[in-house]
Image (cartoon, rainbow, N blue to C red):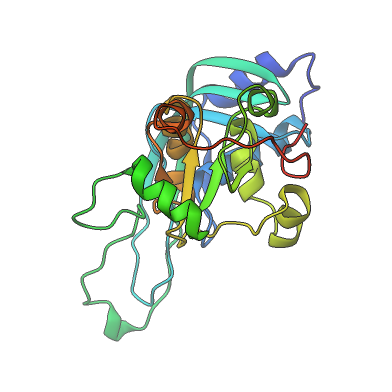
Length: 250
């Protein structure tokens, strides 16, 4: 049953999450996207839904021909934001059930594991980038630099050369768009999870860490973070440009 929004949304969200709800993850979908879609459906709203998690939600990856046993894991949600309204949750709990793939009897003796992360062995995440490398890469046009600050911040400070603006509160929704929709709205090609040339920047480096925690469950582990961000760029004498209205969303 859909809850009226925003009048009863706060209680509705809390009640919706008070009891464990089991949902089946579809192939190739992240548990985070599934949770957001279920919330959007139950609240009967079209607004983007942002959730803050108390632990990372693994990505469900079933692109293999081996037998995968079902596994359950719980996700504790701390905050749900719908259309600008923020709702704190004391204990929101979802149980996500991963589907079982079928296989031939010959494959049943094969030892398998379910991929729950886009991490690669031997790499420390999130991956950072320093001013020198970023400046050189920007000069060559070798990076897709995304500034997740608000548009008014770019107007006040100027923007890093070659950067595009996607405010942090739009980032997850932006990556759920089709390539055509993304290009139309943000004026540059949509990043893909496997891309290794995507860099996030903000003001001081704090927001890019939060953003990475949102992108990791979607498979974007290759996204690099400019930990020093705008303040480091300015301190190093990096050039700043006037924001382009076609790339800065209001």
